[in-house]
Image (tube, rainbow, N blue to C red; front, side, top):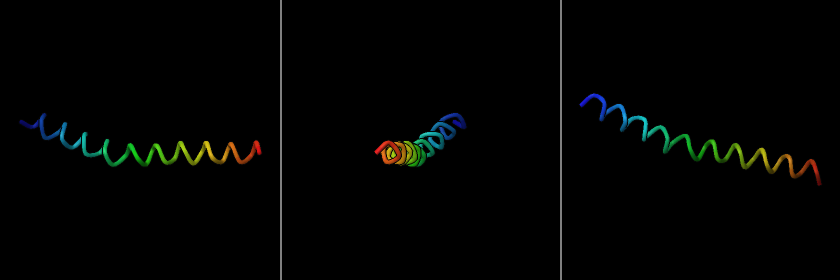
Length: 37
């Protein structure tokens, strides 16, 4: 039972962190593109 709760917590963190990581990657790409321009 404890393992199921642990995986639920992990899934919740992934849902929260994934968009944040993607935004950081996209922002980094935009900065690099601006420098090349």
